[in-house]
Amino acid sequence: MSQHREFNLERIRQDFPFLTAPTGLGRHYLDNAATSQKPQAVIEAMSKQLIQLNANVHRGVYRLSEQATVAFETSRKKVAGFLGGVKLSEVIFTSGTTEAINLIARSYGDQQLKAGDEILLTVAEHHSNIIPWQLLAKRSGATLRYIPLDPSNRLDLDIAQKMLTKKTKIVAFAHVSNVLGYINPVKKLAAMARQVGAISLVDGAQAAPHLSINVDDLGCDFYAFSSHKMLGPSGVGVLYGREQLLEAMPPFLGGGEMINKVDLHTSTWAALPHKFEAGTPAITEVIALGAAIDYLQQFAPEDIHRHVLTLSRTVVDRLKQDFPEVRIFCEPGDDWLGIVAFHHQRIHAHDLAAIADSFDVCIRAGHHCAQPLMSYLKVDASSRVSPYLYNNRDDIEQFFAALTKARTLL
Ligand SMILES: Cc1ncc(COP(=O)(O)O)c(C=O)c1O
Image 1 (tube, rainbow, N blue to C red):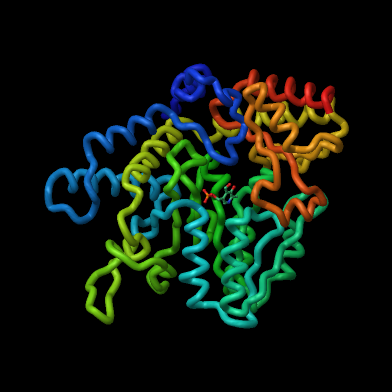
Image 2: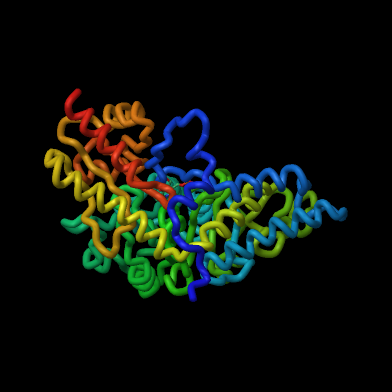
């Protein structure tokens, strides 16, 4: 028998106080690729920590601090399990995906890259997985190259294979694009990178809330994700890194917690993972991320995925059927996570989002922090609908009511 909790939508919805909040503002929340709502269990974990366990971690000799440290480090164990059972030394808490990628660009990148080297990205990256590499390229003299998409907007692996050479040192790409929703062939691309001696970094910001992750099986060197997109609080994220690589890397930020011995002119560093965790961490948030992982792991990931896909396929099918003037950027298939981004010939994405708001529907409008991809797709902005486990058919109905109204008004 399955160990998992039954996927009962009505019961799940009761776990999310947001859905019954008195203001009702944004009740039909379909912007989950931007951030997720929080279950009661996460809210309670935060308030419990703040009320009962508030002390700094790793430094107190009194019981309150010791217990706070245990709660904090228990979260690290949960994250290690969530990533498929990695070593605790390989789990670094950051402020989010963005900081995790910047950490690698600064620490690994500054140490390893020089003029003539190449960094390979894809044209479908979030700005968080472009700008740190642009900055690194400027500092080091390395060159940025971009894997294009095939006609279905999936990564073109044949071209990627040709672009990978001995000059390639870093290959950084999203597990799932926040615009296209395609699950990239991480295993293949990470193996291709390794073949030429490059390291791979996977931006898991969109994948972690939906998929079962096993970094060993994926074969990547680094994996980054954010807590706030997977039911946890903002302000915390995770960088997984292979121990051997992390050991050889210099610290990213300096300060308390990351040191072993400090003299006036030289210092030595704490062991992993603390070498990369300078300063007081986001204690409450890290502990609540553990609660978010517990909450998510009650369910079989396939059940969450199936539910999201059912809603997202409805969106795509109805858009195709009733709104032929809309261009959809994805084609639902086995490699699709259920993010629906589209461009309406006549209605600007911002106008549609404003009208949707009058129906208490939240959808994303704009460039989705992926301006190069918007240029590649030859649009200035697009709309995005991204359901999650607590959304229901009524949310989708309300979205279509808003779209229909927008079409009559504009
Ligand atoms: C694919 C992808 N990468 C990176 C990020 C950045 O995440 P954060 O702002 O939590 O650091 C996002 C957030 O939207 C994303 O969708």
